[in-house]
Image (cartoon, rainbow, N blue to C red; front, side):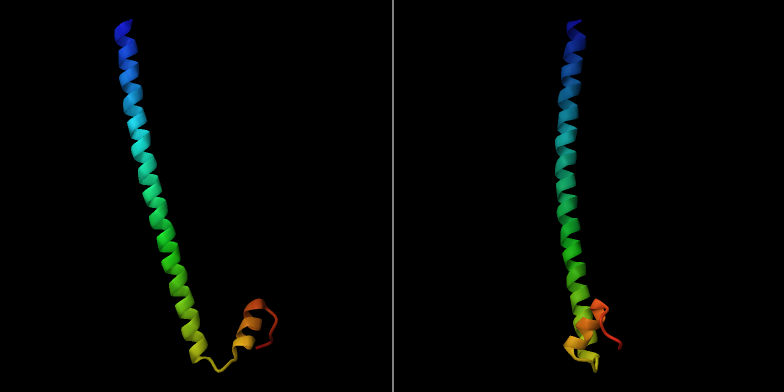
Length: 72
């Protein structure tokens, strides 16, 4: 009976180590995901700004259009 308890204890320790490792991997993956989202947002802002620079419309006209208020 003592052997089974020891085996369970060892198995519990191993499982705890796996959980800790997976938790760290998850945190790293989440950090990378957030960084990639920020990079995408920056690229979107740049794309929007470039489109604005090429446009003949004023900033107010573009903002109104994006809000659905303008008849452009």
